[in-house]
Amino acid sequence: MKTNRWLARASVLTLALLSGAGTASAQQVTGTLGSPSATTTIDGKQLPSPAPEFGGKITNDALQSQPWWAPTVVPPAEAPNVLLIITDDAGFGVPSTFGGVIPTEAMDRVAASGLSYTNIHSTALCSPTRAALITGRNHHSAGFGVISEQSTGFPGYNSIIPQDKATIGRILLDNGYSTSWFGKNHNTPAFEASQSGPFDQWPSGMGFEYFYGFVGGDANQWQPNLFRNTTQIYPFDGKPEWNLVTGMADDAIGWISNMHQINPSKPFFVKYAPGATHAPHHPTKEWMDKIEAMHLFDDGYEALRERIFANQKKMGLVPQDATLTPWPADMIKPWDQLTDIEKKLFIRQVNTFAAYAAYSDHEIGRVIQAVEDLGELEDTLIIYINGDNGTIAEGGPLGTPNEVAFFNGVNMIPAEDQMKWYDVWGTEMTYNHMSAGWSWAFDTPFDWFKQNASRLGGIRQNMAVS
Image (cartoon, rainbow, N blue to C red):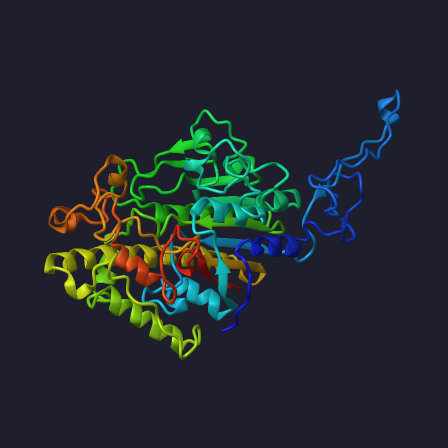
């Protein structure tokens, strides 16, 4: 296993270099300049690239004039397709790829055929990490010192990405790529998130030609606030089994296939950002049944932490003499002090979280397989980042059937009351979250959670690149 000291946002700079963007390389011209079929790369000294001078001839006589078409901008030869994947609210110890117990076969596949990175850092919050990722800038310089819903009228905190902080979508689009964004968009200002716009801070206004996803921090995966570009859509109407995790993969596969069929020589860039594993945790029953049959969490969250830590030592991810920090018993009740009802509820909560993670990874695997089926896998750079921050503790020590209950003054719902939703946990009847004890364990080998930028559990991620 190879490691490196990349910041998460460094992947964007790598993409730019691989695409030839921002480099002063010699321009590559095909065909005869002035003909409609001529193409050219750009030197990258100025973005957007200035329009070329007219090379034809204009006289008073149209028959004596000479037309001249500006060449189509294309990427440099051998420029790869790019599939950039980033999951949500997932700590270092979530995926099996890095010692976790939740099966993540797609991430395993990417790591097995490429490189694994263990020293990747986030900002401990969703919007800031994602702003840094798509711009290659410090999140404050990209306007996202906070999440978009908390923006203020101060530089660095207004949730507005300036035009001179161009996104990777804009850069690659200007270099001749097809560009798209699927899933979570937490980088549009909350005050511009309606259908009245303006839309310059939506994906389609930031260089992503196609957008299929939701705007904001999270979404009901059964009935999301879903958009295609800037038009709200309702593909779930009349389809109670529909789930965005699969719907998003289907749409991405369709878009990639269409782009390849229309112009197979034109590389594509896909930002793939599922809502998983941000609450609410909404897996299908099929995945709930699979995870529950594995009995991964019956021994509780402290035992889970020890198991993940042992796996990480076996994999060489942490030193053999490393030790875990003490369990925060004053904040999260030890497992052996829980009631039988609390244990039963908490296991249901974490099984739902794990099913959501495994389900999402499976659908990511379908997208990767679709790229291979098109014969494009060897020409595709895949970057799979686990989490935009650590696992989240917003469910509190007891978890909750509705993560937004807190905003309505409802805190710490007793386990006995939460059991009313036990049988429908993770369905459209809940907006569920799990006990923070599980979140602490899923950040192993580190401690603390999302929102804690002073502890590695909040900011240390991992990544596989192939």
